[in-house]
Image (cartoon, rainbow, N blue to C red; front, side, top):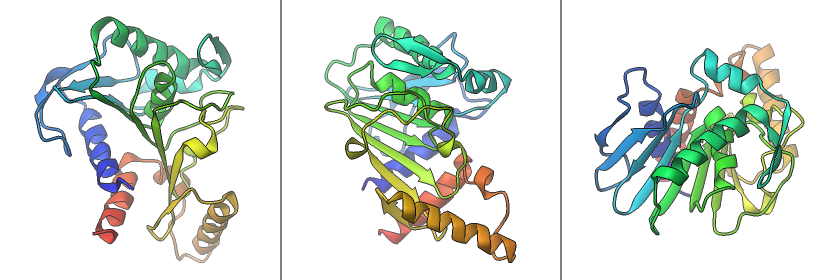
Length: 245
């Protein structure tokens, strides 16, 4: 599994999430040998940056940062889309703004195209991938976003769930959009191990043991929220990368 790429994606997301991150410029991205020009997608509350060079297009969509993002999260009513079908209205609206901008301003031209997103950004990125030709989608702590599970040919999906992260399990009567055998799920358990495509029973057993240990003071409380933070994903994936060296 591309654990290094996932960790690099986390660091890129963290950089873009900084309050003082410029809206455009040129920078080196971890895991990419050549510098990439980038710019921020305007007029969308879900902060989105597009990095590109001769070889790659990297679409980076950050998680919930402010009150405007929270309003996007809370617009949970159903909205119909001609391509996606029934979806979370807030996520779909952001997806459509970003999609329109890309259609009018970016030419992929056979370059490798990757979407990375955390939380809200993961859900929006997942929907966006259903409307564009994307090579790889990597999401962290992605909440459910649409009604219908589908197969998107030619796109590799990797969804990372950090232990008891509550946001990745919020349903809102939706699901994660891709049929199970066509998406790789990486579950980071409470011991820092990465389990690929675990059974539901195995996941809930791991979480339950963690809750029991909290009662006896052996583990921290409120991990359901702490495990959702980008810093927690970085910490857990760093441990996985070290273990696989």
